[in-house]
Length: 129
Image: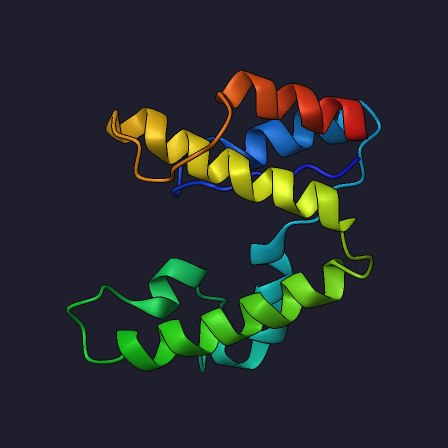
């Protein structure tokens, strides 16, 4: 089984991934892997290492656009390296339906039509793995 934790900075991804690793899950941290690829960019002339956010800058700073683009290209590369086995087509479809059903529930509008309830989709995923 694969789990992906995604969220904003400070939302608990690292905390929970460490907890899951203690339960036997294999842990990968994309930010750490990307930082390795950016090692020369993150190293200051004095040898100290910048944090990723410090290096990327804020959206209103002139360096941000180019650095964010570089980060995202490494993110795609890293995710492709980690995802060596494609999901079965049926599971891929069910996961897409989860996102659509969640969107419908969050916005309280049927933006994506003809979907079963979210609980039913989650049960189908459970049955397929």
